[in-house]
Image (cartoon, rainbow, N blue to C red; front, side, top):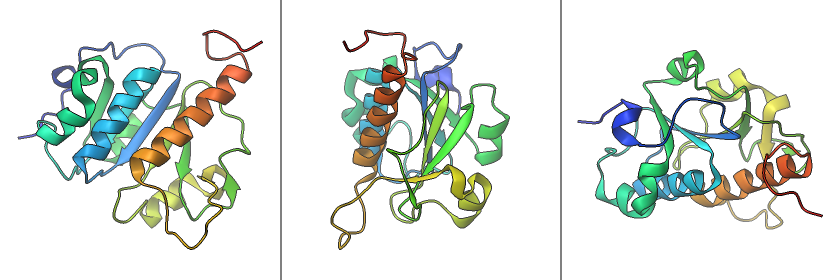
Length: 180
């Protein structure tokens, strides 16, 4: 049985504002979620998992991909989209990452507390989520080779997260070391 108690999943603090949030809508592949969790732990980003999940949070592949980083991860599990939106730990503003967007993820200004939302591996984001977030907050990762469908979920999450963090740093919002 899957636990939805974030304290059972993580020893990381869940209070305070996160620099960035990564939201996975109904992820299906534990290795992707584990890799994204590891990336979130390393970057100090908050991970939101919106059920249903295609695996148990006790899955050995999930743990193996996240390895020892899982205990340092600020992770929140939400029963559905409405529960995420009602959570005090939710992102301040949302960006839907989708191949259907016309705006590049390079062409927006990120702010502290933004959330990057990703659909599931097999189907992407459902239409209702596209409608809820809207085209003004839908972003694509540019693909020079249009013949291929899209990047892997974990790769997309990593690329988008590091771009948003780079932008925050350039704006002096990261709280960390600034480039000269």
